[in-house]
Image (cartoon, rainbow, N blue to C red):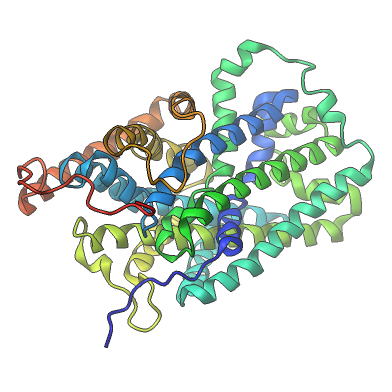
Length: 465
């Protein structure tokens, strides 16, 4: 009997759908009023900046993802870039180490946001909110416990709810008749120094958090059809499509509820359901209740995509012999990494009971920026120097300008997370280093093993070479 293995069953449409439902979770509905409160009339600039960074960073992911379409995404990219028998061992291990913590935090943030927004429909106490968020994690785990082709169909169904929800919000603002007013007022209080301020950095953290997920297709690289073409295409379609939706949604809400009113709510902590209030003012309470249910649907869809993608990361590392072997186990009948899924879901369950939304957004970004985002950007340069660009299915246009721009923007975002969050990142990063060196010593891996003759830094042949 043949051993179970991942199947290439997801085409361009399903890949794009999975990316988009990962991006549009509870994030934009929770962060929209926060960004308005931080930036005032200039709030759209934070969403534009988030779209720009996502688009530039997607170029880096596209070059790497199209060349190495394997389960685990960044795990493979970092290992190949820094040397699979050298420093790449450490970089990829650190990525998996932070993923075991960071991925459940992402899932917990979606579940916590779900329980918070449910408060518009049903009054929940703190303990009841935590029970709801934990139950959502369990529900999504059950939905994911199946074959990848079935998951693709579920993703399309969830994506339909995402598009209908955002479409309703946008059309509602247009029909109100004042849709372009926020664009007319965008420069009313414009100051260049504000774009370099800590407040703008904080606003960008919230907007970028809402864009995260454009690269989810790379985690599923081993399950994508024609990956050399479909991985880059799905990312660019996702980023551009979601950027248009986010800008239109923010403009729509701002045309009905003035940013001054939203800022007052943020300062006093009165209203956390801005989008539901927006629908209520346009169509009444019943419509607002329906819209809130649809927002909760969107949150559930995003959590589904997040757990789907990240469950492949520990699996890929374990299958490669660089993480605990049990994570390499595939379900004997359904061919998916069920151990990895169950472990990440277990951590997400616990985190959803322990943390608040405000605790996790900045932490999610800080833990990923240095090792993953900046590490990959530098990794593209190293790979180009070592292997050249011949045979790459996708090549970054205007190279190396997008790479330099991405590194600079990510450093700005990292600084803006604040000293407390940076300290938490350093604790995770430092503990990962300690564990890696112990593990490497026991396994006789770099730096305790000298690369022998004939061993190559890049041991996986690129697609198209």
